[in-house]
Length: 436
Ligand SMILES: [Zn+2]
Image 1 (cartoon, rainbow, N blue to C red):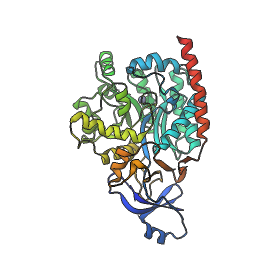
Image 2 (tube, rainbow, N blue to C red):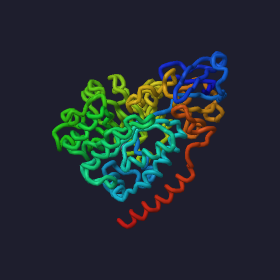
Image 3 (cartoon, rainbow, N blue to C red):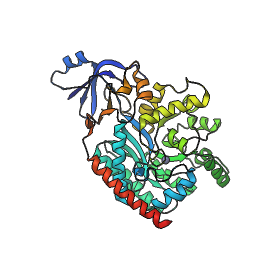
């Protein structure tokens, strides 16, 4: 049993931060919470860890990424989504190898830990390698193999991708830190038949479905031309709009579509920096939240962002809505923090995460208030959203175990991951050179 003490403890995005408080962690769970002196009296045998002048807060949730794409970071920038995908990403992904995915994910996890991410949603290829990295590094994830109509470099024909998804759903049904979701990539890469088959598997296992939706204007016109409906109505007609659907982006939505997503209890992963970088637009986040939609925050893959810094992503999410509407009261820090914690956890299918309360999982982070950019501290939510940045996180705990302590990642060799990804980047360069 451990007692964690700090100057400020943020228990939840909907409560005032607690001053000079302590958390009791037993096993993977939070057992108690209270003022430091009360807790020390009540649990005299427990080991005391005093973080001092720090903020302890619930681990952040990256609600949409493609973690292994660290290997393609900066490969092709300043291009429209379809050109970027079709001329650069899809051609190199044809040569994707399992070990690229494994090392790319390990590097991604290190980067995410430094900005306080303890749970992430991942959709990519060779997802078994992502799972291996998640298991070894001690973090938490909801993930699935990306499904397309065209053959995949990892599983080959679609049939095998569906079978693999089902195999993973069975194998990880009761894993403490891993949940499997069904991941048809998008409405423009998956036929109605593929979407229906993916949905049938998700229904059978009560699993989440994760898909890219209404990301760009081009996507909306393409789907409208192909099927006579916008992407949300198209998914609705196939029976996919429901509370187990997590859509990434949701940028190009009409007011009616916002209402439809709210009515069907669809979850949204908002990816502001990727949407800005690819020139896709700005998602109507305040309207979605007002309609009652559960909206989390995602970085998207590090090839379209180009980092996995969720602290920065929170700041961007807050700032762009203010600039867009000439209204500085839009999307305040505390709301953005809720999106990055409890709403994100709910969107990813975890109900005892995203807050530090008795009975919840002990997934938490510590930011030291000793950093120049974090002095003084009038308001912890504001400090975390507007002033903190990746690298300010000193300690991370997942399921009651320290994954990072005093700035050092404990569960794996980060230097090795960096070296391996550098080597892989040379292989990627060679493949692109042969193409040209
Ligand atoms: Zn994505």
